[in-house]
Image (tube, rainbow, N blue to C red; front, side, top):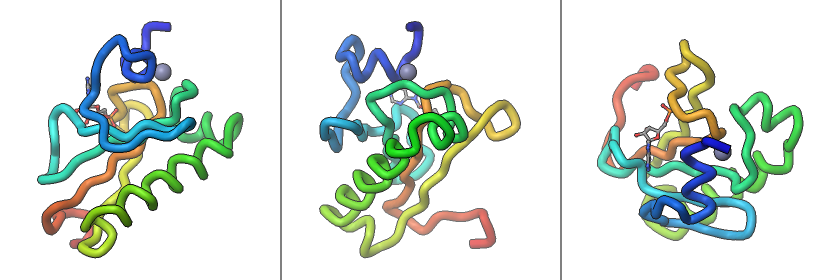
Amino acid sequence: MDCLFCKLVAGEIQPDKVYENEFVLGFKDLYPQAKEHYLFISKEHTTHANEMSENHPEQLSHIFDAIRDFTKSNSLEKDGFRIVNNLGPNGGQTVFHTHFHVLGGEKLRGFGA
Ligand code: AMP
Ligand code: ZN
């Protein structure tokens, strides 16, 4: 399948990994939008969060468990962070393998902040 993030999972492209378990991969975003910017994906392909929720809801738990473990292991949980998911063209999704952005390392603006 011609999917960028499946290629990362397969090791065809080497991401800057920050977290891995049997279900989930976490890695640095190549074009960070905050001082710290990570992406968390399931190793199994789905196209977007609604498809994941409908067909593989357990993957949502795996991803959020991974984000919890990761952000507890550094200062992100203590200092605060933001989880973002983009779905489809109006949401700004550009990679069609479900992923959750974890942004932090500084005070984030927008969304009423
Ligand atoms: P989205 O716009 O929500 O689909 O997010 C896709 C994200 O993937 C963007 O923030 C990109 O900067 C990021 N990205 C694209 N290619 C790579 C890559 N090879 N490694 C890490 N992040 C990437
Ligand atoms: Zn994929």
